[in-house]
Structures are given as structure tokens and as C-alpha cells.
Image (tube, rainbow, N blue to C red; front, side, top):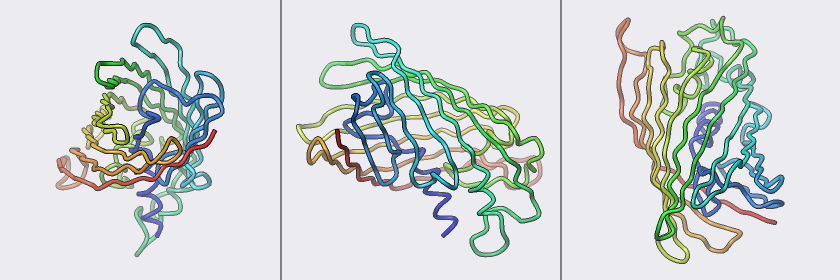
Amino acid sequence: MKKIILIAALLSQALSQGEWLSGTAHTLSQGRWEFGLFQPVRWGQAEGREVSFYKLTAFLMPGATVKQRWLQRYDWTISSSHSVYYPTPLLKMVTKPGIGGMISPEFDIPNMVSVWNMVLASKQLNNDKILTVKAGMALASGGSDLAVESTIDLPLIYHRLAVYYNNWLLRFGSDMNSRLSEKWTYLVDSDLFIIPGMKGSFALEHKGMVTWEKSSRFHISLGYKMVYGQYPDGYPNENITRLHILPMIDFVWSRE
């Protein structure tokens, strides 16, 4: 069960899809709320400002994100997003021997915090397409005593937690959102994680999803996540590169 909670927590951070374009520079309209099974709870706190948090891990890995829109000119929208996470309670929960354990109890989990900053630029293209490019950096504090042998070498998890071992990482990405018909949209995206100095120093992620919009208040997304990444297992001083393809589904509700 604890493994499922951890995987769901990190999987939720890898999801972003839907008519309301959580992965773009656009923000929710003021006063609008959005709720999903895996996606974060999103709130249009003000015109051009959005606040979100992950309800699956609100107590085990507290965190929140603020996205601020800075510029809308011609077909471009420029925003920045700023997130903070405190993963210590969740990692301590999975530090145990035997079934349910993902980190050996011989390792201590210190109090750690990370801050993720991203700049997003979205351009409206023809035929209801929106192209988004983004770049950012994550910084972490408190992990100087964290043993590198305690990493969780799983897709989606390893490269998001690597910042606590390395103190920083870089992230670049692009999204393409488009409408197929009145009720169907799709998303294709890619993200590159670079963790200089770490064993297992990169991951390239790609997601493809289609969304059925029953109404402006409910939609269902279905797709896949592909992860091509390097992991620090295998023989000493060697890395292993693996490819994983994972199914994805989400249900999202909204209200004004």
C-alpha cells in the first residue's frame, strides 16, 4: 500500500492534461476550481494567477504551486510557476524492511525541502493548437547527509527525487495541445530531466493523451507515459538505461 501511495504521488506530478491546459502558460479563470484523481487541485486565485496542490499527498508530502501569468501579447502567453515540496514524511513512511519497504531502514531520512521554478511560453497556432515550451531549475536543501544508496530506482520516482541527493537539477520540456473535435482533445509532450554529477543523470519522458469532454465541468483523459532514463544500479560505477511505458487515466471535475 505504501508503495502504491508513493508511486501515485509521483505519478500525479507527471500528469497534466485537459481542456484547462494545466501544462501550458495559461491559468484558470478567477474563481474556477479543478479536481482530478491524479492531477492536482487547481484554483484560479486571481486573474492571471493559479494555485495548486496534490491532494493525494497533502499530509505525506506537503507542497503547493503558484503559476503567475506575466505577459499576453499577440499569440504568446508567458508565465512562471513556483513549487515547494517537503518529501520527508512520505520517504520515512516507505523506509522499512520487508514488504512495503522501498528504502532500507539503515538509512536516515533528514528533513528536506525542494523548490521548483519554471518559465513557460505558450503560442496559439492555427487549427486550435497550442505549443508550449518550458525551462526550469529545481533546488533542494537538507539532503547533504542523505546516503546515495537509498535512492528508489524506479521510473518517474528516481529522477524527481534525485534533486534531494544532488541539490539541483534542470528540466526542459514542450507540449502540444490541440482539438480533434467538439468534445475530443489531445496532448503530446516531452520533458528532459538533467541531474549533473549523479549516477543516473538524465531522463527523457514523453506523454500522449486524449481527452473526452462530457461538459465544461467534467472530462476523462486516457493515454500513456514513456520514460527513457538512466538509473544508478548494476555493477559499481556503471549506469543502466531503461525504457518504460506506463498507462495513464484521469477523471477531472471543475466548478466556478
